[in-house]
Amino acid sequence: MEKMDVVVLGAGAAGMMCAAVAGQRGRRVLLLDHAEKLAEKIRISGGGRCNFTNLQARPDCYLSNNAHFCRSALAQFTQQDFIAMVNRHGIAWHEKKLGQLFCDDGSQSIIDMLDKECDEAGVDRRMGVEILGVSRNERFVVTTSAGEFVCESLVVATGGLSIPQIGASPLGYRLAEQFGLPVTDLSPALVPLTFHVEDADAFAPLAGVSLDVEVRAGRGCFRENVLFTHKGLSGPAILQISSYWKPGMELVIDLLPDVDALAWLEERQGSEQLIVNAMAEHGWPKRFAEAWLEKQGCHVRLKDLNPKKRQQLAEALHHWRIKPNGTQGYRKAEVTLGGVSTKALSSKTMEARNEPGLFFVGEVVDVTGWLGGYNFQWAWSSGFVAGKNC
Image 1 (cartoon, one colour):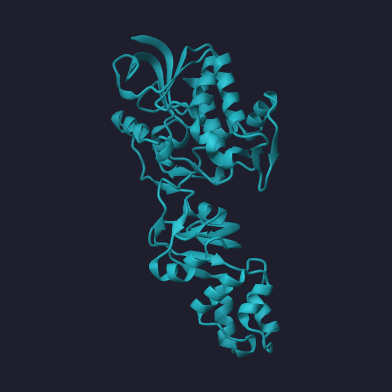
Image 2 (cartoon, rainbow, N blue to C red):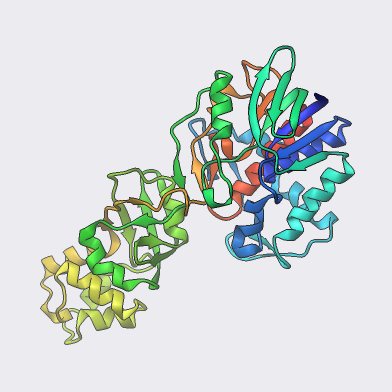
């Protein structure tokens, strides 16, 4: 039975950050993971270039049952703090769009940076170790396939349920419940949505078509591209809104977000041009224009629209309502919505209120960021504050 000051479960973004910071404080830290490779989610993120943070990261870019919970951690370790670490390690990066920062040379550079931080802090890292159970008397006892480890502080950084093909597991939620911490409802987030049968017939053949739109659902509203797939809707706008969408809810899509559709139609009310051709000239892919107008019953000339029809078409252009059938699930989700209840944790330290020495960080917590580097920033910030206090 080996004795440590801190055992961190999960060698991903939050776990590695936490282990490095705790080790820098002089704590004896053991970092455990059931995977053979470090930080697979970092490796595959951003198309292999790792969208490691966002210049615009702020509390209102996160979903949680307690909207203010993430504020303290994000303030204690900001995106600028992480950028400074990246710069210190000589990693080249660039801003792609909307504040999204990516590595120039690939995501492995971020993994190597965190690994080096852990090495320099004296962190003992062991991979391919299965966690068999956790108990506590005076200290935590972690039983694993590599033996038992005793520690004063236990940090759960095991991630969520998204992308099970790289090893996602419910271990963190089970440990929370074992120690009396509630777990909120869980669902896939930042995930493509699927068509109902009646919409699939019309729109599934449009796979590959992309449009610049504004999409709304619940309290969410995003202006980005939507991508049609064989199964449904994807693209940045849909991934973003999926975190706000609930089963049975409609999406409301503005197909002409920069245009007054009614004024545009009235300007052309005497035209012999087919509406489908006018829409194609306006920038719509013609395949989409044909399919969408067919669904609206408007495969006619502009001059054939009476005032009522123009009004109805303009309304549909700005408020196209489509009800998804569901999501593509955790296999396609980037993150898990929900998690260990923030009511049970200290926002300043990430420590369990009812179990001193037990910490939860990263995706396992009920804090979910927008698409575009926000979830990595939550991992860095929550891992940092736990590392300062475990």
